[in-house]
Length: 457
Image (cartoon, rainbow, N blue to C red; front, side, top):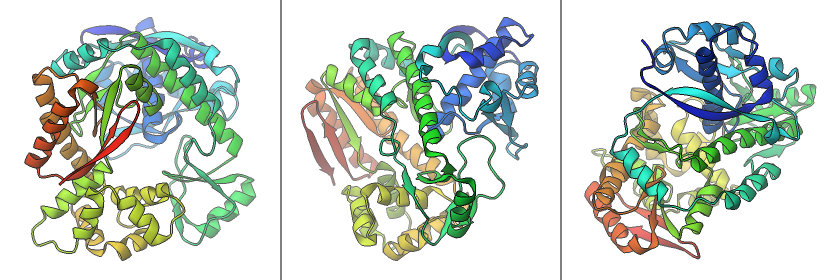
């Protein structure tokens, strides 16, 4: 199977990777596929893990359809020279691949250079040409109507790179973990077979390895803090620079995701600081559904026959107060701590959910429902189901309705971006579609100079 009709795109990659790759005795086309493979590993790792070094799944079918059936020629070289490594074969007919930065640079970091941005090289890659359906045409037309001032966005990029800190990385650094079991998460390469450890085991390991205990939304990380932040900085440079270059060159993408039906575009994974600036520059309004996943979960709970005792949970979720309530009831330090606990309970397995006792004490019936659901469908199913519900409402109902009426509208999953002059008609459409869908919620309406909230009951 071949890749079909191809188009050329450009990406920015570190000089060290390009130099290593150019040593390979392969054709120019195969080399471009190898560059594309490495770039997509880093991009998808950043989107999923907030860094460019974590393992990412690639099925045999994906590799053949996105490249050619001869993909093994260059993949073997990447593995032979250890530029890329992979985990053991999985039951899902795939491996997890990750970048082996130690071989590329001879050090634990990717480029450990203060001039990483200057070390990036523009590389041409080949991609399969996608048909330009109505979603692409709508997105392209709306994006081309905007002013994207490169000089205005560049200072935001510089600021993000220069201000990678503990606070901006949304992590905590603690001297010791409190009693409990924790997921020990390695963001760099091959994961261990054992993932959950007691607080004593992690505390002792931290002292023996002279590493910091870093608490992130993915789990506990043991690493030198300065190195951790340097890698975060490098990830920001690589990801942001490529995302902005795509916008400036009008290299647009807009496709429905085959897993969750979401509409994936250049904006859906663009850091919010850039989206906010684009909206301000073009006098656009952002409309977001507060804690949307919990709102859709509440609808699932309400639609479950003979399920009682969930009114409190649903009410707090619909009113946008669920995280504040959990923070107050459990005495958590910040609202983000409450949000992390809720996300962990919702999307982790039944047996390894940190905080499940606390959650159960607040919402026993919801806890029991989640336990049974995950047991019957697998714990990964709940996130996909909620995203499909979100897509059905925000894309199939609201977005398509607005676009058929000729209204400017961009989407970011559970968020709509519209022109100020269209606010009233868009809000009316949202209210109508929410009512038809049977969903309640709290909308956050962000204008260039103010923020308002609207309850949909």
